Length: 429
Image 1 (cartoon, rainbow, N blue to C red):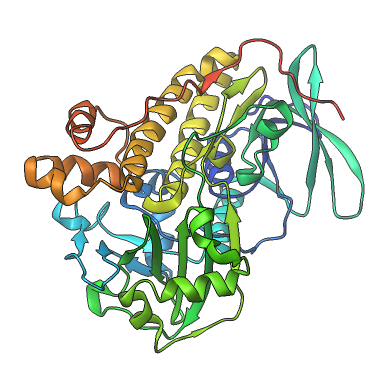
Image 2: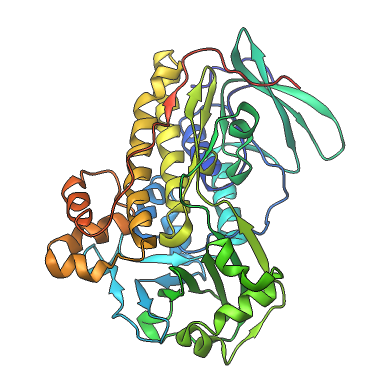
């Protein structure tokens, strides 16, 4: 099936071996296309984004990962719970009350270093070539079309790789968007996060052991509490920078310790554990690429768009985009058409899902908003809210948005995500 002709020529070259890149590579390689992943780091490597939502099931099933995950030691996740600053907890929202318990309704809390390694190895098993510790320096252009990349391996050797199509799966680095000036900040969602890991902190029992908890602090900030295997828990706080750094406090551990005091449930959970001692901080969560594709180039996963992590949508969107990209490219190769227009439906599908999830994120951060109040007025809205939060994002939610707008304003869709038909404006150095 492969159309590549020479040792240095591929059907697809993929920048980045995270979930988006590994998923797309697995599909393309399974179809028989000559596929190369260039990954800057050496796996396993650390990454945040550890709580999978139910609708990661479909892309994971497509690439054969579900049996491997069921055999893994990752903690099973069946629910999400919300906690007020004074410690009052909602009842767990069990996914199996809405979805099939044996498939979509049971997901996992993963250690990304191990999970991403599994995905990368799966792509290898399907036939993809992987070169780790290899940095992509620039995109190669011929008559305005991306024709591959120039890469440098760990020995310092720099060489070209030719490909019919290049996939930018570079994650938060957003390789193409940053270089092309396509990276657009979200008008409102500009939070920061501080997090660490605790050993032997309190957690639930039985089916509740792996539930994720969203615990509120002042000014619509929130903690995540994610139980992992080996008695470890990922815990972090997300809020506006002006809130977390109030009083001039900027050191991550000091920020974290102060916010723990702002939620009694979190304080209690961590009272029996001990921090691993390393604290992380990051900012500028939400961003979007103006375009999803240009001649010879396709953006996938976080390189295309990333939303605030409050509803753990990142890995789902990465895997979903990887699956859509792999299938669209396969069809394009078979039909001899990899033009940007080929990926218009790809971009539109992802933007629809991103915008649906984005509306719920905006609502969540509005001080006047409460899911409980919406459901009290419209009981049947609970199912649609659950679907969107679970990652079933490509459906018509217009009735839900109309109802939520009775309580709080919601943003208009951003005008991003179409393919760029003209020659790519990509720097050559």
